[in-house]
Image 1: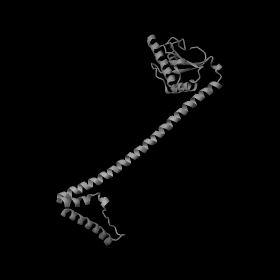
Image 2: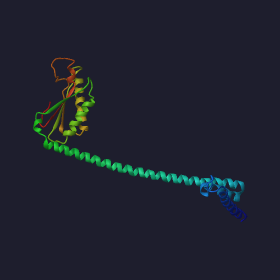
Image 3: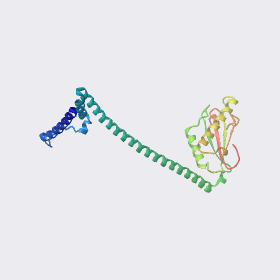
Image 4: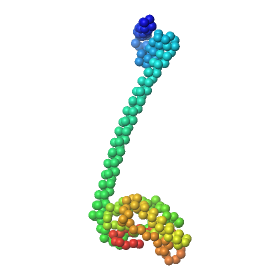
Length: 243
């Protein structure tokens, strides 16, 4: 009972000291007053600890009061972080939804463009076929970036036209053995076919053959002319013809 009375007396004394300090310094003077909230229970915990347990109680009470204030601040910071995280997730979900809608619109526009092309284009001009050659480096079946772009444009422009078929024919020059050149021509024609399929051309409207070195563009063995034999011929046609 004596300890509780002493604690109450000390608290009243602290309150009185705060009022007196204000009277001494005045409202305009610079004086940092430690309020009960700013102390976070540190001062009050120390006072109560001192009354209840002596010096050791003062230390323990002060530490506990400080920990209480620190925990309170941490909870507020965590609450703010979670709030910002929820806002970010909400914005991300909105962006995903918009992206999905734009992707659908792009597909619809591409389909409409293909139908429009099919309706307006005179496909009788393709009865004999539109052809181009995809060239390759020596001993290579890798596509050059420029040809990848051309093949992609063809597939995207005409893949929706059911009348059109693509015929691919792989070739190699006469350097190396027959078996090697046959394999090389097959690898080249497969590279072109894969590029067209990746760009959207249907497999069922694609026809591929590989001729190795059996169909050179020149009958003479001219090494400078071999560059033109390292090719894949492409024919876009409405007729069932090959190259």
